[in-house]
Length: 101
Image 1 (spheres, rainbow, N blue to C red):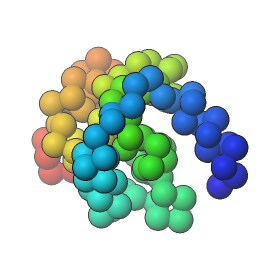
Image 2: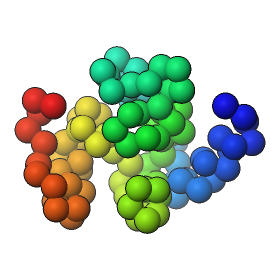
Image 3: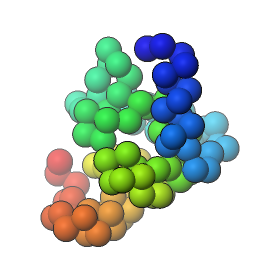
Image 4: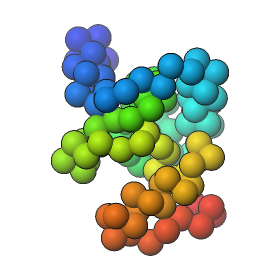
């Protein structure tokens, strides 16, 4: 992907960086072994985010929710954050995750 486009996406999503290299790498590992991972584009097919950008953020603007500021999380709860994923699912009127997704 064009570096300038990716930088623009990062600037649009970024609210607060995570500033924890170990956690960032762990998040990337979880994503890249998920069956929803698009390796060709290094993206999540569920939320559409670029893994290397989203994994580095503590808070982000969710482009699918009109730029809503969120605690950065895996929409499937695979970052040991099922409670956060379910909190946003509740706000959006969706059924909670059970861990069997």
